[in-house]
Image 1: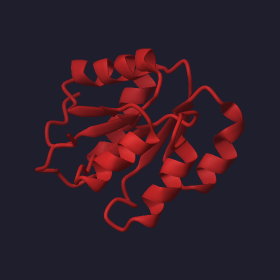
Image 2 (image 1 turned 180 degrees about the horizontal axis):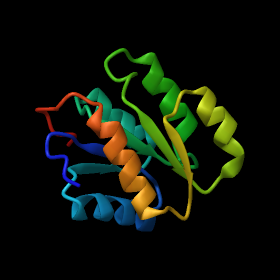
Image 3 (image 1 turned 45 degrees about the horizontal axis):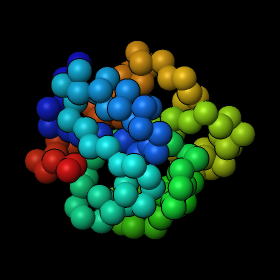
Image 4 (image 1 turned 60 degrees about the vertical axis):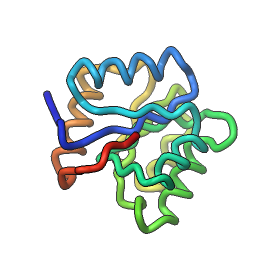
Length: 133
């Protein structure tokens, strides 16, 4: 799979998981930018990043995943960017789905399923001329 006109924003505080997800996407030649927590991810969006998809952890310091999503939805410039939750916390699924996430994946992740979700979400997005980072 190759999506050169798109990019993905990965918001994950666990460095090992973040590196694994970003590495998988880069291996598939998908442009990716990685944020260390929800605040970092919001700062990237506020600075002009417009990814075709956000892969979002829920349990993070500063701004957690649910608060990231709430703030994202409040901003007209990036409210429509789809979000796939990637988390080890199954009890938050209903709340995340109420916030309109596109999918909810539990850790440990299935790389093939993640790539399928990325392809599906990014194939519906208009090509981006601007990089996410």
